[in-house]
Image 1 (cartoon, rainbow, N blue to C red):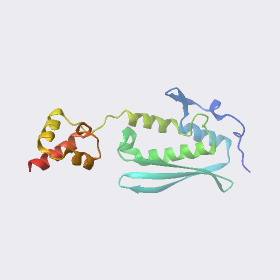
Image 2 (image 1 turned 90 degrees about the horizontal axis):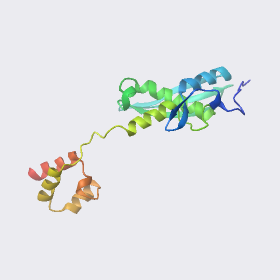
Image 3 (image 1 turned 120 degrees about the vertical axis):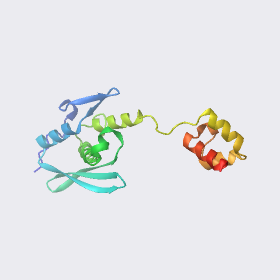
Length: 177
């Protein structure tokens, strides 16, 4: 028989939360602890795929032999600090957090867990590794390229200034060869 003490109650006031951008988020370990204390069930994880350094996990919440909720997560090797060494483990944890959120634990403000949101915020703050085009490159391209509109269409950009430094080097090297 299901022992689900959380039904009809607010789990957020029973779980520790962490603030990110003025919103409360529940960490996955808190969701797991709450689930274990309040339910007779299990959490089953499955590595769905791991191809080219990107993995997908599925987590299922099972009570009385029935799947009550699922959650999926995808992580890429090297994306962010944790994923440089532990992207598979991080992915499994994220899938568990989403499954527990879909089950109703710790979701008063968001299904996303603290870890998911913190990682997303960190990814948004990561400076782009693609160098911007320089004024020297812009001048050189204007000198070398006869059909600038065709080049812009090829790179799917509106103006030369939208090019990356790598794209500019590519055009310049091609024209100089």
